[in-house]
Amino acid sequence: MSDNLEENEDLEDVVEESVEEEKESTSDETENKEALVLEKLMEENAKLKDDYLRAFAEAENTKKRCQQEIEKNNKFAIANFAKNLLGVADNLQRAIDVASKEENPACEGLLKGVELTQNELTKVFDKFNIHKMDIMGTVFDPNYHQVVQEVPDKDKPAGTIVAEIQTGYMINDRILREAMVVVTKA
Image 1: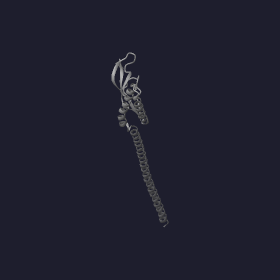
Image 2: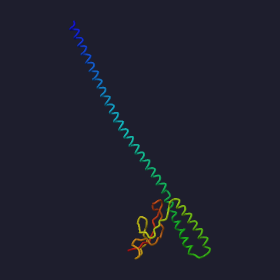
Image 3: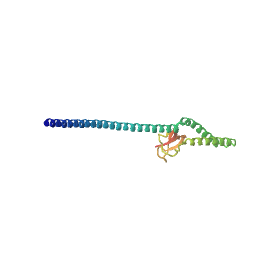
Image 4: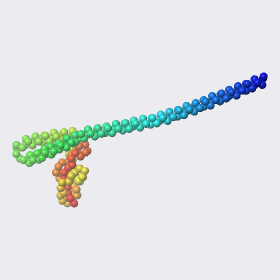
């Protein structure tokens, strides 16, 4: 009976060891599964974080582009209107040129009125950053000037602007109207 008892105890020890090994094995499997799940979640989290950062950066870039487009539109929104007023400025200058050649005292009042009107128009142009191009004596640039005539001149290099037929205007560093010019030829 003692042999039997010993066998039972040995058998119980074996069963307990087996159960403990099984628990450890199950525990290891559970830990492995949890580790895999945790690893997958961390990878997914990193991917979502990267996607979020990219989307945020794209939104910021779009916001900046829209802001720049709005600023550009605001700067040049009046360009067409201003271009139409350039004819008025030209006519005022012509009137001043003709009236100043007249020695008639009756023209003095008219001349003064036209000059005041031109000054007022110039103030409005300045307010909206519209200004005349100062081109006399400079070299012809096809981006800013349109040649109307070429004249021979041995004193100046070829392509030098010697006369301005129509004044050129800029609006905020952009051409509003090219200047029509007379240049020297070789």
